[in-house]
Image (cartoon, rainbow, N blue to C red; front, side, top):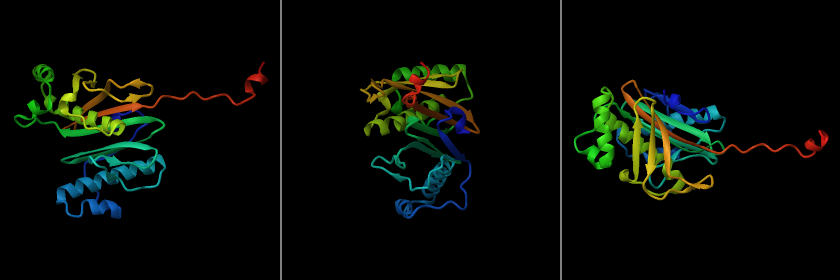
Length: 234
């Protein structure tokens, strides 16, 4: 499902069930040894998705351990992202030479609990959400905003290793084209020779979920001609 909002350079694997045969590397097992069943199932199936993606790309399955902020640590040369919510888990993976960073998030298509929107949004974002709820009913736009903010953070952190608060990005959702833009309100990192000022992303609503994704593609390096080739055609 999530692959429909990701470019071809990203390999995506998602599932609506917890595969009975999914297992963990010993290092991963240590992370969730004392976890409750819900947390353990989310963690295990997300790693199962990640390893299916590794196999599709052609690299050996490897542990995916959480870093200092809980971010998944990927094999050398790879970038990726993980999301899970009730009844859904997904992992995406890409080669770093093709994708600079990626962030995904999935949430139930249900309104946020009272008070949550105010805690995670800017005043202008709330104004826009109110218009979306009025003009395009049937989608939990407040939850969509929350999901987009999560995707922004997941794309931001690998580039900076810094925290990003909810109010540090101003998000505008396009209800007709399935896209959103996030303007950073803090100084971004240098990426591909320029200061990063924001992200663009895509969203979908399907099977009771709102799903968001951000991908920053790596620049295409032009191939140089083999030495002597030009002289041969003079």
